[in-house]
Amino acid sequence: MARVLGRFGGWLNQQAYLLVCLTYLMWSLNIVLGRHIAGVIPPVTLGFIRWAIGAVILLPFAWPYLKRDWPAIRSHIPILSLLGVTGTTGYAIPSYWGLQYTLAINGLLIQCTMPMVIGLMSYLLVGDRLNRWQVVGIVVSFIGVVVILTRGDPDVLHSISFNRGDLWFLLAMLIFALYSPLLRKRPAIHPISFLAITAILGTLWVLPLVAWEVSHLGIPSFDAHRIAVVMYMAIFPSLIAYICYNRGVQLLGPNPVAALYPLIIVFGSIQAMLFLGEVPQWFHFVGTVFIVGGVLLATRMAAGAKPAA
Image: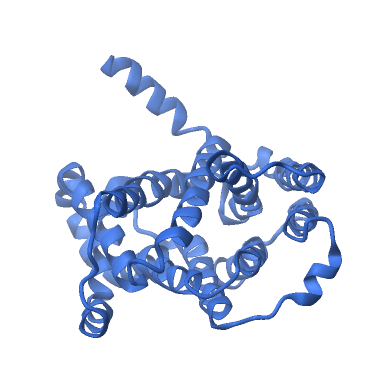
């Protein structure tokens, strides 16, 4: 059994697009659960607990690698701290904060600009350029997203008004857009070491914010339901998804991975149908065709790209 699992893990580690799809599948459910619980558990506390639990779970497995990689970690604390904040709590906290105030359509429309923002950040920080297929694919996917979110009625866009939740969501998006290209500057340490140290640093840097929030709002209560939601957030969209995402960026680069981001909308729609009992309409199918077509266009040129070192 161990040999079979090892072979499967080795195979999966080379399947860049599958890793990215798994990431976005887990993240899409995190968005659904975040909307469900963000008003119950304060956002700073939720983001902190999610990543603190993830770090504690990961630490026993990461400890041998952390000891081996400690010299490299110690000499790269500044960039690891930046990656820890932008990739973990620095993204989670403002997104949970925004989910308390913004409408779903606003948050999703803002999120769908992520590929373009990551492309801009990648160009500014590491010199990566979006190729023409990626640009075309992003635009086509964005059209599909708009079709779904507006239910096929463009007049819906005229009724959108932005509030403080939208601004928090925009901040979260900008923070995470820094994380993807900065991954190119990470030290050469084991992936488990990298995830563990960024999770630890990401939680340590927000401790003052946690203390401030608890002093004003108190410690939230937890029941079995809330514990189950937090545990999912700590294990799947935090640990497993980030391992998949980091490897996907390493194999493909930040821009092709960002071009696949609209898949979150597809996965989220399916989850809404399964868990919320929503019935698919014609605009879901039309939008999905555009999204999948855009993803295929965006990955056409990337498929032949050489893996990043």
